[in-house]
Length: 461
Image (cartoon, rainbow, N blue to C red; front, top):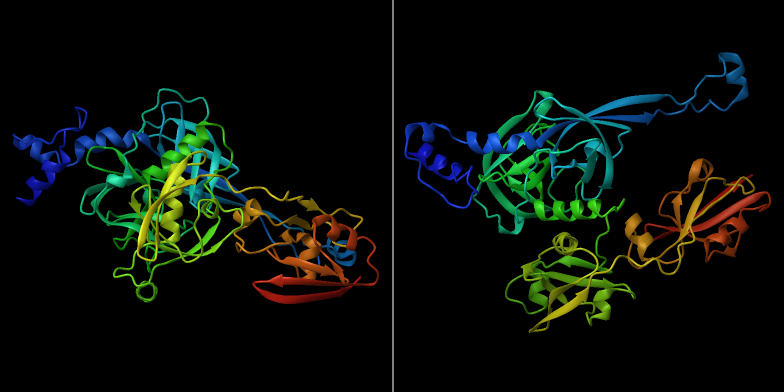
């Protein structure tokens, strides 16, 4: 009886537009199981082979002339090592746009994509975003490819049947079945992805990354990205990036964007806990409490203030900053979203502009040259665009270390340090750093802020 019921759902008009459920009439139909939908969807799921060249560590003696003369000029030089990555991907258009995980292909120097009919294509990443763990590839010289249609992932419900298609452990394309076991999962997945996920108990293992999570109609629900595990294998808790976010990535890639642009809220917030809800006089903990607002924030312009609670974005409930960011990212830059604001016991819908992080004031990113004592040091003025790109605190101002470079790293500088002074000269703009480190004298003393704490570095030239 259970088998018949499962098959009833699995045979939801897989060959006729997938709009009507019919009861299987014959024993042959009952025994098909998921075969029709797998046959329809699997050609659009591909295997991805990525080659990543990494630089090995140099010997600490590699620049010493004595050791170079004694052991030879190649002594201690950093050596390249090749790392191969195996994963899956999903074809999203007949002209060769493919989605996969950033952790599979983001750093690759060479990418080969193999389809189920054993055709091979070279590919390149046209749009990638490490935080979302999404990469959009474009296959070279591809046309008339099979592809999956994207389902509105907001319509997915817990308990729906789902199939995961991918290439686990490199054994070849494999299909596993399960159900949607959770929605709006944030901060629970392992891997690079940090955001909003669909949870499934369909078996997902290494190599499944970037593969398809589909419904029984063969539509794409999400992209498998990670698992929650202690052993390294599937324990029945897997996570997929929702199809609605994938659709926004595909749209931007087809528009020619090389970097993903997400709407900037210009706010910091926190999950509404039971204690916070009680302090605000709320019966049910719901929404995101605004704890900080940037002076250029579009929410501030719309009348929001610290202490307000955002409960919905475009009618969809939000309960964490990651979920709120997801909702705004799906909407995309350039339009508006309606945010439901709770202030006291008054709820109000407020229209907010969806803008990209402003590059104001100008970043003035500067790389120090050989005339300075720390050549290769890269510094930038802090603004919303830099804050977003580097993941800095919303309240930071001043000049930030983007890259300490080889000499700055030895001096103790780190990416994200905020420079305040050099040899008692105040640092307000990147050019001040260049001036202060050009012929500074015998000693250099740098005052900076790191993780909210004041730090002083001093070294002799």
